[in-house]
Image (cartoon, rainbow, N blue to C red; front, side, top):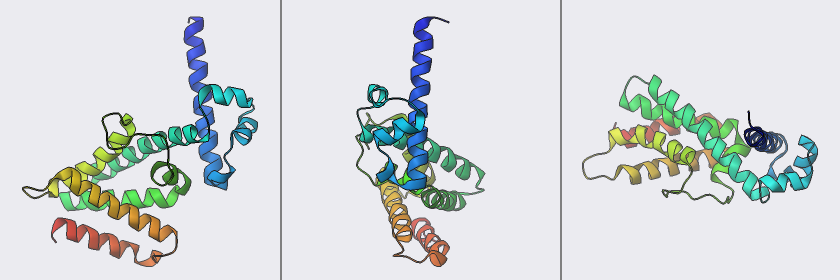
Length: 192
């Protein structure tokens, strides 16, 4: 192994360590607790080492968001693939999405609530962001009627899921009626 290859591998490992530490700290104490000073102490590297990988907290949050989108895409793909039909696949996508938001609130915030320096809805968007949206699209596309834009329909479905997840998490919608709300949403989207 060349010295250059070893250095690249070590650099990638430090980046993974930083992102993992930020993600874990955010999930246990919130994003307010994630500072470069705190991360440096957590991973036992100096702040200049962190800044050699990331420009600051926003860049770290963006890396966490990209990783989170990859995780979400994998969960959505698995849920959709296990469903026996179109309606069931859409319901599985909806349930998986809102469950992900509920189980991983800080990660979800980095992905979809906090401003992060990532391009969304463009060709320049990182592949995991496009893949997560692609999994939503794969669930919605089969129910699109002639003339409907599947992308816009997917954005509307996503917005509904995000709204449900956010309002429920903030206590503005009661948890005990969540499944009923999802069933209503699926019913309206599938015409049944």
